[in-house]
Amino acid sequence: MDLNLSGKHALVCGGTQGIGLATARALAELGADVTLLARRETLLRELAAQLPTPRAAQQHGWIAADASDTQALRARVEALAAGKPVHILVNNSGGPPPGTVHGADIAAFESAYRQHLLANHVLAEAVIPGMERDRYGRIVNVISTSVKEPISGLGVSNTTRWAVASWAKTLAGELARKGITVNNVLPGSTQTPRIDQIIDTTVARTGRSRDDVHAEMVAAIPMGRFARPEETAAAIAFLCSPAAAYITGVNLPVDGGRTRSL
Image (cartoon, rainbow, N blue to C red; front, side, top):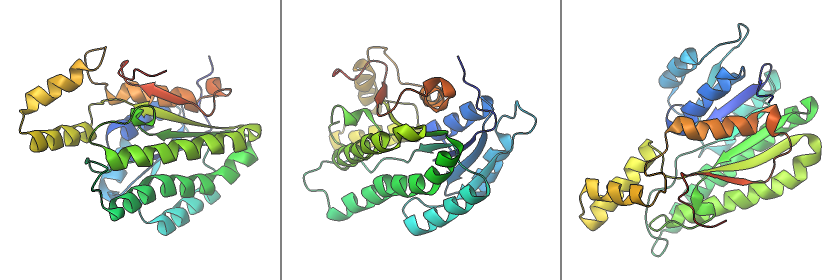
């Protein structure tokens, strides 16, 4: 099985923590040059310097950018891709705040769409020309199992994630003949700051104890535990590899069996 990413350049969004950082490390282990993208410049510099370098010529870097500022985001990534074509794009950003869809403010939808759908589109548009030239491209969007089954209490997130999934499926069909794949990975409950946010919001809304909320969430997972970020990152890394060249347009749950639909 060909998992070798030597000579490939990966841009990983949300690369300072959780699934994003775990993915950056996994891609670096497979030989890719990795550029981290997030907002905190000092932390980005530190983490980029710590990424694995099993191949002597590997070079890792970083870009400090805010996904909500699409104009600046486009400019910085276009500049990156002009100097060093990006072959792998991992779109990954923290979800919108929890809450019901009824009563949600219009501004919450606008903010979520800008951070997820519009940012993903801007990034893809910036790197696709280089993927076309090199006849190698992998775009993986880290979304949510809510693409298959809406999650209670995540109204704005559910809506936005579906939009991203539809965008990705459309893009996959348009790019398939160019050797570029587009896939979505759907994490379930993963041990990241995002899951802590969801638990804390539920505790505040219901008055239940944190232990009770945690136990109920774990009980809904057939494997009986939350995922580790590295487990989700492994699925992403596979989809980025040469071995996954014939997989495109799919939604892949990595959720310990929690999703009940097909």
